[in-house]
Length: 66
Image (tube, rainbow, N blue to C red; front, side, top):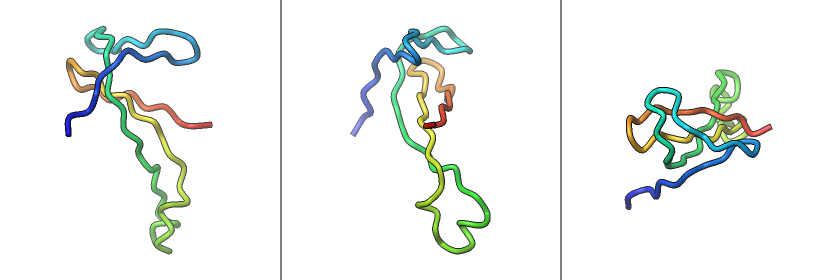
């Protein structure tokens, strides 16, 4: 399955890639693993980050869910 790329906004502003200035991205979610929770096999308790990947150059933009 190929991810769908779309234009995105962050805090009301249209996102453009800081590397190539392209304006479409696909999304994934990443766990921000810590050694302590990984040691106890509790990775699922770690915070998550939203990744928006530029559809043109592949640069990954990271956003923490606060």
